[in-house]
Image 1 (cartoon, rainbow, N blue to C red):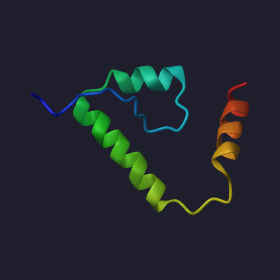
Image 2 (image 1 turned 180 degrees about the vertical axis):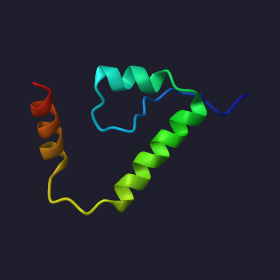
Image 3 (image 1 turned 45 degrees about the vertical axis):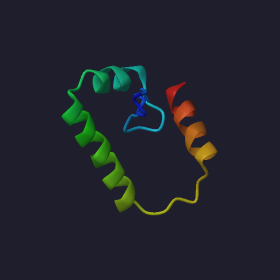
Length: 66
């Protein structure tokens, strides 16, 4: 019996990707996706600490898209 299960989880280098970002990222080869995600993680580690909550950030992104 196989004890490992494969599941698919959508992971993007943006908190709230646009449809265009999703399409661009989905079209990348796996190794390029990995590079993009690792670059986003590194950018996050290099950025200063924010005083904003996750809810504040989502609200800002949604407001920018209206």
